[in-house]
Length: 480
Image (cartoon, rainbow, N blue to C red):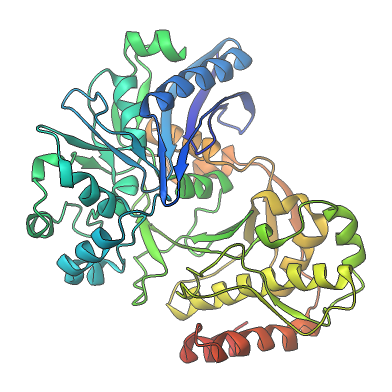
């Protein structure tokens, strides 16, 4: 039978499962919906729904794959989503989701208690981070409670017993990736008992094997190795195939996420960029901007793209923020989208928005270069924006770099890649990803000097509003 590796992505709206072969053929896919409870800053899900949906999605993917041999499975989930369970893994609380923002005071308390540790790690505790949520839950801590990250519940059910967490999901709970340990001294200051926290291993570590009960639920054969996963953002990077040092993946959908590979961790004193530890010992720095497709009209995009071609550059310069507040490449909670100048018509306005996103993308690449991170070779473009051929070409032009578009690039594929790595006897991760991630299209940049003045105008305006630091603005103007 043909060998496949199964990736499971526990998202916000659904669980997706994908069975992939060693040469990147998608043998089968499956999905099952999830539902949330939202109320202001609260965002919760029923943890049992994650396991139910994982079973449904896995069965569908394997049914579509037919007669195959499943060689491994790995699970990713949303970053910062946690719950409390008892010692046996039974949920004691709802799952507090990645964007649950109620723990504002707790985040400030955690930041103060571990400031020297967080400074060394180059992170800043935010209300949506798991450590802040732990403190919020600890106000009424049940006896014997255990912290679990979203994928921990699924992997424990697959194994039939609790298993270690992976260091990628543990990062936002305060895990020290440099020392590879929990900062117990900081937790002591916060009155958090050490037994609350699970053991942690690197992504790619084999956690155990699928048990008989899990086979009945998921269709994954008993005895299949379970491989420690990564967060959905890191999983998407694995699924892009951009895993050599100096390579970067730009994920553009509702918002913009930039992730790359470095030989050593990148220290960002502002905390807008932080690094995950890759399974192969390299580092995965990244940052998430709030600009993106969320600022575009909801309909008629294909027609607007065609009309926007005549406005290069647009008569206006846009900062197309999808929502309120900016996180990367600068931190400005008060930031709001704006438009400098008056577009001539709807097509000109659309052109300004498309170009504005690409300008922020260029600014973000300049920012990471300014921190000392290498940016070499072609970029990989993933996310919903790659459906627009025009916008993809425009981004390559403004960035001045060749872009590669994979056939399939999603978090579930990234977990299939990681499962193959974890069960391969440590073949190089970039080699495995290169075989499993097929490139659909390569886009070469056209000369784009016509955009330079508009780009500089946006940088100037961001600096003038006090959001972009002067030294970052100066570097960005000169960097190409």
